[in-house]
Amino acid sequence: MPDQVTLLTRTIANDGYGAVTETYADRETVFCRWRPFDPGRDRVFGDRPTADGLFVFTVPWDTVVSETDRVRQGTLTYEITGLVSDKSFKVGQRVLAKRL
Image (tube, rainbow, N blue to C red):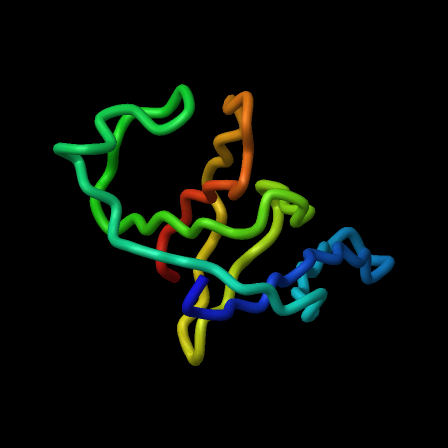
């Protein structure tokens, strides 16, 4: 895979006064392939309908990713909105994300 992205893990902290703060820390850098989401080709991604401004990242099959994570590629950060893991012979895992 020609590109690399950094996966960011969410941490939630309570300040003791009822407010909650979300922060994201670097977890790991993995190789990937990415492309803009194509409504003509990706009519339904997982069980979700299509939307504009989305990107599909393909990461190695054994990468641990959740919908609470974020992806950073260079200076751009993306919020993960969906995962596809319904293949019988997985060599990659597809991640749907929108640019923040």
